[in-house]
Length: 186
Image 1 (tube, helix red, strand yellow):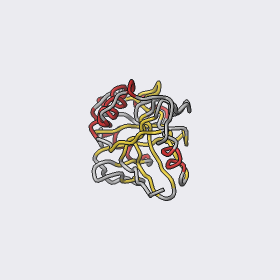
Image 2: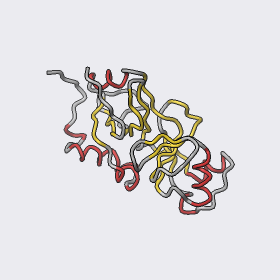
Image 3: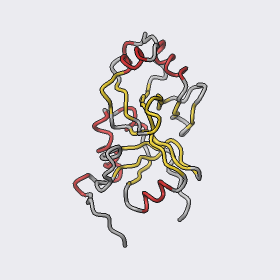
Image 4: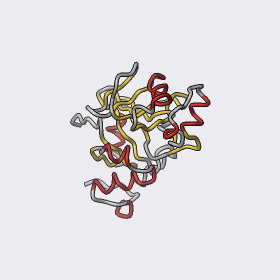
């Protein structure tokens, strides 16, 4: 199989994907290389907002415009750890640069900045992430578990969570009603 790099792409879970973590999921791939892949599920808010999270981790939230932002279930790996998908990238202690405009930061300093100054202004905070070992994602793609489409920052940062999956599908020119839960091979 040819090497494919899906960094800065969305994965759209196919209906036949029965894993409860990924059913109807839209995953933003932050890194994909020969060692595996790392992504964040971007359409699964949990029953917690930033105000609640900041209270739990003892960070003062002085930016009231951020208080009601949802926290997301980012995936089943490291559920006790926070990840901040953000634009612009900025300079933080531990940031994975996804593209020239978007970063994924796992260090506390970005949350302190969000709490004190509301910056970076465009964020998506998740608990946990989705991870694939080397070759695992490629195998799932070969089994027709996922559709892929280049990511659009507007889908990540401008749309409510429930609108993100339909918008990513629209970017492919399809809707869920056109998908079958039976995989076929030519």
